[in-house]
Amino acid sequence: MTAPAIELKGISKAFGPVQANKDISIRVMPGTIHGIIGENGAGKSTLMSILYGFYKADAGEVFISGQKTEIPDSQAAIAAGIGMVFQHFKLVENFTVLENIILGAEDGGLLKPSLSKARKTLLELEKEYDLKVDPDAVIEQIGVGMQQRVEILKALYRQANILTLDEPTGVLTPAEADQLFRILGRLKEEGKTIILITHKLREIMDITDTVSVMRRGEMTATVKTAETSPEELAELMVGRKVLLRVDKEPATPGDVVLDVKNLKVVDDQGVERLRGIDLQVRAGE
Ligand SMILES: Nc1ncnc2c1ncn2[C@@H]1O[C@H](COP(=O)(O)OP(=O)(O)OP(=O)(O)O)[C@@H](O)[C@H]1O
Ligand SMILES: [Mg+2]
Image (tube, rainbow, N blue to C red; front, side):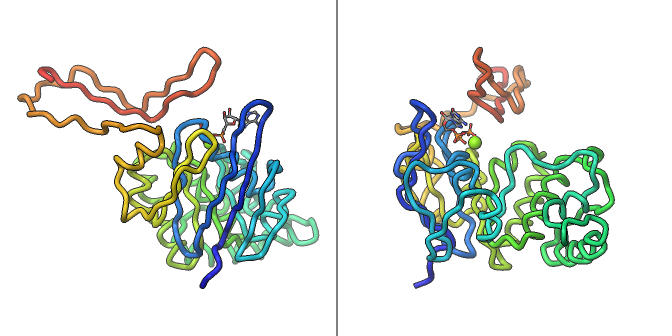
C-alpha cells in the first residue's frame, strides 16, 4: 500500500489554557487535494504551523512518505518537501517577484548569480503549472492574486511536493479563486499533494478529494468528499444540525432591500468572529 504523503499521529498543542490541537491524527494521501475545514479558532492554522516547524507540538509524531520526521523549524519542513502559503503572505514588498522567489535559496548566499539561473527555472515552472507571473514586477505593485502565485512558485522553486494553503481564497476575487483552483488541479495532475484549509463548504465540495473536519481543537471526521454533503460537513463543523437553506414557496421576489457582501464581524476584543458573509434580502420575503 502507498504510504501517506503526510501522516500526523496524536498531535497536541496548548497555548496556556487553550488546547488548540487535541490528539490529532490524519493521513493525507499523495497526489490528492485534502481539505481541512472548521470554524474560526478550530485549530487549523496551529496544526499547519506544527507541520511547517513554526510551533513545536506538545505531543505527537509526523511521518513524511512513511518516514518519521522531526520538523524543528521551517528549513526542516522545506527539506522534507513541504511548502506553505500563509493566510498573510510573507513577501518582501519592495523586491521583485524573481528576487522574492529565490530569497533564502540563493547559491552560496549571492543574489546576483542566482538570478539568471532562477529566471530559467521560473520560466520552466510557469510553463509546467500554467502559473503566470511577471518576474520583474515589484511585489507592492502587483495584486494579491499574483502575490499568491509568487508564494506558490516560491514553494515549487524549493521543490515542494506537499503544498499547504491556509485560507487562500479569503483575499481573492471569485475569478482569482477559480484561477487558483485551476492551478491546484494542475499541481495535483503533476503528482503534488495539496492541503487546503478553508471554512468555505463550496470550495471543499468543488475541489477536494478528501476532507477532514476540525472542531474545537479536535479532528472530528475524515471523509471522502464524494461521499459527503455540505449539510453533513456543516453539522460536523459545529456539532449540531445546521439549516443551510430555507425551503419555502418563493413569493414574487421584489427589489433587493438589503444587500450585504463579504461582511466581516470583529468583536470588541478585536477577534474576528465571522467573515465572507453574503446576504441578500428582497421585498416580500
Ligand atoms: N500563538 C498563539 N498564542 C495563543 N493562542 C493561540 C495562538 N495561536 C492560536 N491560538 C489559539 O488557538 C486556537 C486555535 O487557533 P487557530 O489559529 O489554529 O484556529 P483556526 O482554525 O486557524 O482559525 P481561523 O479560521 O480563525 O484561522 C484559538 O483559540 C486561538 O486563539
Ligand atoms: Mg487559521
